Length: 90
Image (cartoon, rainbow, N blue to C red):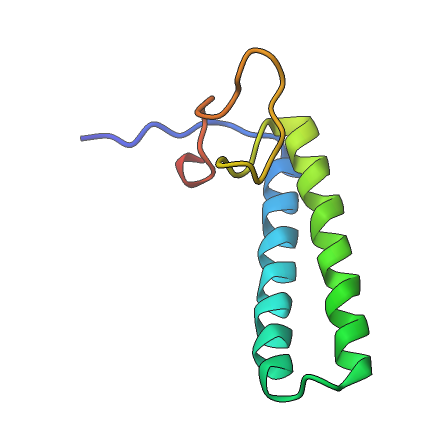
């Protein structure tokens, strides 16, 4: 069985990598803040990265269609969720 590879632009992979990096930082900060809820510097960092994630996600959605379904991304008309390729198919 051969796996069909989709050729996507370089920006697609860059945005995905940036999103993964931002998600990693947010998870770490979230875990830290669970035990240090009054660390103002960590909260500011968390909010900065949360904002960065929104910007990256909007950029990704605008260029390549919705990254996440179930209300995490808006859809154009017609409904785009499910439009190939999926992030794990590239």
